[in-house]
Image 1 (tube, rainbow over the protein chains, first blue to last red):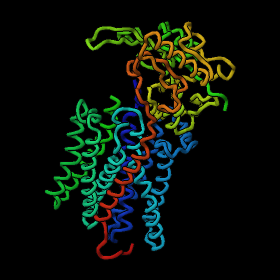
Image 2: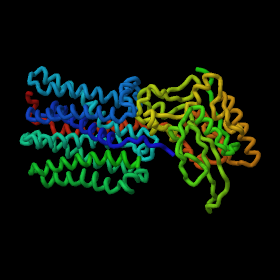
Image 3: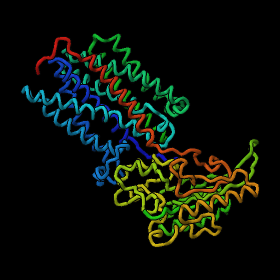
Image 4: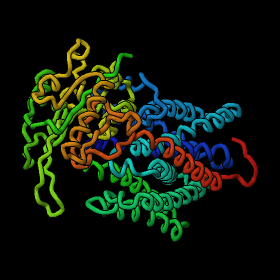
Length: 274
Length: 258
């Protein structure tokens, strides 16, 4: 007798792009702060990617409202225990960090670079938040499967990380900056994220047990097993190990990771609302 | 805060006439809807954005599938003391009145629909005409003018009663005792206990059997209780992922320039 919120493709896209934006930003921040000078390309791509995506996120969220002109009403309340409320605030604050980091990524002055690095460490917190909160938002509902999953936020975060890193590596490949050591490092980081995601997914399903049925059996099962587990995680990981030296193969892997990230959001949202 | 008001719905007195459903529609000026045939007298199958009161019809069967008896229950928003919809509302449109009831300010709601997914009873509905969330208002206009809700006023058998919560609770407990003496062994109150699930319901019920017979959850839970655990687990994942990236990017040759 429960009701579904009718969150459809706009929200699937929002969850997907928000994950990439957050993941790309904290990857950039880590590369900026702890990488070498040669990793500059990674951090620049990451910062600059997060900005338009965050903008797109805001537009998608506003478009999905029943009364879009009232979107500012979201800022009429601040409920720290409510993912939707802190999500609206968090997205705004993250956008600000993304903008500042993007602007500062063009500067070479030592002072500005120092400022950018410090800023990005704080901004990363919001990047992690943006990638994860959408999962917690779903688990804080009364609907079966969503409300039963304790690791939805963690899973979305790992997926945000892997898709964010995949997006960075893909842009570097397409932009011809995949030659340096930064590309190898971001691919390596992506590999770790995918492994973490795969492990989290296994634990996620284990904890859910029969509550995971909307995902694991029924009409969304082929998409879940084939699209997310197969195409989105296992095949890219295999490609990483067999085709590491061939850049085109690695780029193909990145595309598959992005497809998997989209499929994850799609099956999670749609299976409960089908 | 004024004294908490409540509605007490006694299913043992319900005759399924749906006067409450009609009175609610009339007073609240809710538009007509196409009937939905589900093979039962019940119409509609669920609460809608235009049906805030809903008489449910249930057929109780025994283990062999033999029809035992009819259950009729006039269902409504529970106006929970701990309301999932209210906690989920990011705009503050959903608020608690001085009488303890839960209401949606239609001028503030922006139609995000999070409340729809946060109600443990599937009450809140999205209205496509106004593009906002709607539900029973406990006849907010009437109670602020000394009148009871339209449904309670219209009920011909006093199955729906309106009054101060503490007084109704006493009457409800007496009624359970009466029914048990008459042989209704499973007669029980649902939502009356303030120490029970959701801090008690301000629209509570007397049921003649287990809540599940009436499609009600045995232990409705506030969905926001998941937030702390899930956030901590997400932070754990963030540390793990961050550490992975740190290992991948760490600079073996000391920090370089810009």
